[in-house]
Amino acid sequence: RRVLVGTGWKRLADVTPSSWVEFRAKLKRSAKTVKEYQTSVMAWLNWLVRMEKLAVNPLARVERVRTKGK
Image (cartoon, rainbow, N blue to C red; front, side):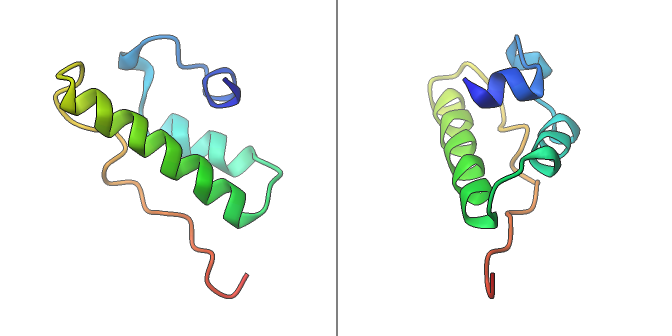
C-alpha cells in the first residue's frame, strides 16, 4: 500500500521506471529496506507478466539498490 500511495500508481499503465526511481529516492529507509521494497515490487510485476496482465515488466531494466558495504 505504501508503494502505491507513494508512487501514485492507480493503474498498471502508471507503473514507470521514473515514478519508481523517484519514489525510491524519497524513501527514508535503509538501503536494505529499499532493496526489499524493490524485490517485492519486482516479484509482483513479474507475477503480472506470468498472469498475462502485463506484456513486460516495466521496471525490468531499473538497477537494483546496492547494499554492499552499507
